[in-house]
Each structure stands twice: as C-alpha cells, then as structure tokens.
Amino acid sequence: MMPDLGKYAFAVLSSYGVTIVLLSVIVLASVRRARKVRAALDEIENRRGK
Amino acid sequence: MRALLIRDLMLAIRAGGGFGLGLAFFLIVTVLVPFGVGPQTELLSRIAPGILWIGALLACLLSLDRILALDWEDGSLDLLATAPLPMEGIVTIKALAHWITTGLPLVLAAPVLGVLLSLPIPAYQWVVISLAVGTPALSVIGTFGAALTVGIKRGGLLMSLLVLPLYVPTLIFGAEVARRGAEGLTVQSPLLLLAGISFGVMALLPFASAAVLRINLR
Amino acid sequence: MSLWEYANPVKFIRTTDKVLPWVWTLAGLCLVSGLVWGFFFTPNDFRQGSTVKIIYIHVPSALMAINAWLMMLVASLIWIVRRHHVSALAARAAAPVGAAMTVIALATGAFWGQPMWGTWWAWDPRLTSFLILFLFYLGYMALWEAIEDDDTAADLTSILCLVGSVFAILSRYAVNFWNQGLHQGATLSLDKEENISDVFWFPLLVCIAGFVLLFIALVFLRTQTEIRARRTRALLAREGQA
Image 1: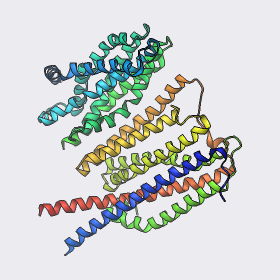
Image 2: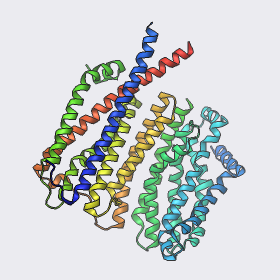
Image 3: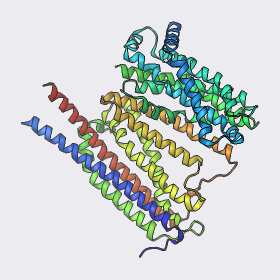
Image 4: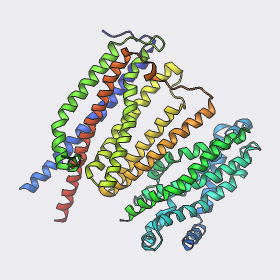
C-alpha cells in the first residue's frame, strides 16, 4: 500500500519522520508536565484541606 | 544629565574596561580571521568589510554588561531612579556613554585594522561612515538587552542570546554599505536605511529600556 | 458574558477542561486524515515528483510558526494593558510550541530543498527570516526561565516580545534587501497558493486545520499547566512563611 515515492523517497520520508517525532515530543512533554504539575498541586491542596 | 555622563565616562576610563577591552577584542578578532580563512589577499579584501562589522559588533556586545551591572550591584541605580532625571534620560545617557567608550574607538580603529585585512581603498570611507552611523544603534539596542538581564546573576550569556537577533537588521545594512562601498557601487539606499534604523532605535528604544529597568527595580 | 471572564484562572481551567477533549480529538482526526490523504492518495507533481507531499507539513508548520508568535504578541499586549495572568501564562505556554513549529518548517524545508535546489540550506530571505524567528523564540524562552519572580518575568518577556516583533519585521525586510543585493532576481520562493490545484489544496487545508487545532490544544493544556504550577509555587511560599 506504500505509494511509489521514486528517487525522492528519502526526502519525503524523513520530512514526515522528523515532523512526527517532533510533534510527539512536544505533545508528550506537555502532557507529562501537565500530569506532574497537576499531581503536585493536588497533593498540596489536599494537605491544606485537612 | 551631563554630570551622569561625565561620571560614567570617568568610571569607564579609570576601570580600564571601556576603551581598552573592546578595542583589544576588536584587534584580536581581526587578527584571528586570516588564521582561520587563510592569508590570500583577494579573499581577505573581499570579506574585510564584513569582518570589520562582525568584529565591531562582538566588541560592542562584550562590554554591554558593564553598562548597568556595576551600577545595579552597588545600588547607585536605585539612587538614580529616585533622582529627578526621568528613567528614559538615564538610559539614553548610559547608551551614549557606552557608545563614546566603545563605539567611537571602534570607528576610529576600523581603518587601521582594515590595513591588516587589505581592505580595498574606496571601502575605507564607507566602513568608517557605516560604523559611525551604525554603532549608536548597537549601543542603544545593547542597553535594552542589558536592562532586561540586569537582575539576573550571570546574565551575560542570556543577554547575548537576546541581543544578537536584535542586531540583525543593523548588521545587514551596515555590512551592505561597507560591501557596496568596497565594490564601488552606490551606497545610498542601504546607508539611508541604516541611518533610519539608528535614529528610529535611538528615538523609541529608550522608552522600552526605561520600562524594563523600572520593572527590574520594582 | 464577555471574553474577559476567561481571564479568571479557575474559569479558564474549567472551560478548557470541557473543551480540550474535543479539540484533541478534532486535531488528531484532521492531522491523521490530512497527512494520510496527502501521503497516500495524492498524485505526484509532474515537476517536483513526490517531494510535493512535503507541502502538507511544511506549509502548516510555517504558518503556525508565525501565528504562534502573533498570538504571543497579542497575549503580551493583553498582559501589559489589562494585567490578566492567564494571558501572560498563555504567551509563555505558546513559545515552545511555536519554536517546535519553526524547527519543523526549517527541517522539512531543508529536506525539500536538498533534491529541488540541490542544497540543504540557502540564504534565501524566507529561510533566513525563519532562522531569525527561531532565535527570537529561543531568547524569549530563555528569559522566562531565567527570572524567578513570576510577575517580573511576565513583564520583561512581554516587552521583549513587543520589541522583538518590531525587530523581526525589520529583519524580514532587511534580509530581503540583503539577498536581492547578492543574487539579482534569483528568487527561490515558491508561490504555492497561486498555482496549486485542488488535488493538493484540499488535503493541505485539512492539514492546516489539524495543525491549528493541535496548537490550540497544546496551548490550552500548557496554559493550564502554567496556572497550576504558579498556584503550587504560591501555596508552597505561603506554607514556607507559616
């Protein structure tokens, strides 16, 4: 099902590759930091709530 | 205002950092370039205007943190802030003092160093003129960078990162004037644009620098 | 009901929490379908061959790289004028996303330029101004990181953003001038929208929508994170005093 990319396969594939990698990095980093900060805040608020 | 200018100049001369360091750095950059690219005269004379501009720019950058950092540390900046002088005036004077101690010597030294790089004869006047018109902009932009990072410990590297992109338009037009002058082309439009940037920056950026300094002194 | 209600951090978090799953889903949907459509189901250009497929990531990422900075500029102005913390934090949240978009645009451009122009990099005005834009992003983020006090950092970075915008525009025109001075008329810019046919245009539109939605989702999420981080710091400081 792979389209025939001809002699430019390297350029096209690496473009898509770089993009997917970079986008996943920024999405994962954002999500992870969001989880961490949320957990930290919840912990403090629970502690204060007691 | 004049008192502040004289005080800054005196401090720069006595501390020896102003005149000496920037000039020595400029000299060293110019001397190192032939080692890096080879001693062929025609190559050197082609890149000489650009090298002189880059050297002047880096020498300027090197001395930027002295503009405000010392006054910040010993607290005289707080005193100046309470003085009747508006902050915009203080910032402008600081930039002027920086230009007199760093920019002006660079302009004067450029033709001498041009000899080392076998700068073409018609280029001398344009290198000097473009530096004379452009270095004030470097000082004013640099003062803005110094004001931004004055509260940060070891902010020198950060300041370079902030200031260098701001130097791009000045460098492009300045080097373009020098290059066209070297090739005997007409220099009018880049020179006018360079002057436009210089005057625009001098007129507007002190307001931003003053605002930034007020925030930092808060 | 005014827009400024969202300047309230609690309200902002509550609303974005409701909206976020939708934005994520839509962004994912648009991105996947647009990229798959572009990659598998579009013909090759007769002149550029298969490299034309790069357009589906190059153009949207370049668009977002510029628009992210514009958004930061607007957010900075709102912070300076109205002092809404959410606005300053949103500007901070957008910067790394914009920087990533700039890198993507530059990288895909290099991969595209290599077979088309025979070089990875040319000092073409567009390429050069993107590199400068990337430097501005770096400086902006570094300044945020370097300053400890939140409000001072917000003030300084927003002024840097304003000044930087002016200089970015100046650089854009200066670079234009500089390169035309070197290569007379040797323009490398591709006027894409002018001569693009519908076969390429529709998947490109879907991809642009996907990138915009992804940007919105990321900025919402990261702004929430910044709000929470700020609150955490404030609470910790209060505990330290008590």
